[in-house]
Image 1: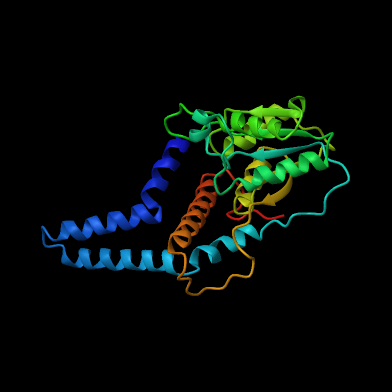
Image 2: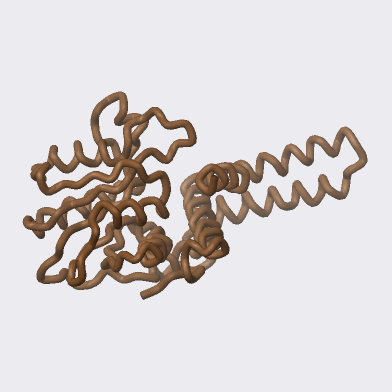
Length: 263
């Protein structure tokens, strides 16, 4: 139920949908006497679009998430590497049988680098299908094809293909690996996604070493105008809003212990 609710809520509150709904309200007020509501709706739509598309708001909002966990110095030895799904276009890969990346695909590139750096470490890919109506290939299946294509021995790879969100990533990965005291598992995911991931792994009783990848901010962003890439700005704003909403929802429902987990 939480999975379905989260997908539905995000569809309604993401900036593009929100702007559309606000403009619908403006249109509807023309057929009635809700002129005050119409003015408020159009003002909110203009503000949302202006800040999201023409300023650095999204980058500023992402910055504290990406800065929460710094990548440590490479350890001398590790048990293995966990890479969370979310970086592959599974709908395309289901048909073309490839390993096409989306904008979070750097997590897979970094996991590949680590797998080559630590040739004795195991590699777990955690990711089922995040679609409301499953039918496409799982992320774990696409990921397995990617790593083996680049020379990683399939005997080293473990797949967890049932999880649909980050909470299930953490729980099912712990069940799959049954980590022992003294184990050192690197957790690879996008930097903005690391606080929520670590919080959920902690809640599942799995002590991991955060290894952020796929940075979207420079780390020294300030608020101001950014006029040259409005579509990109709006996309970053959507990512930031979604992640903060996710953190708040997971915290309020007791799934993580802090609204912004830190080291």
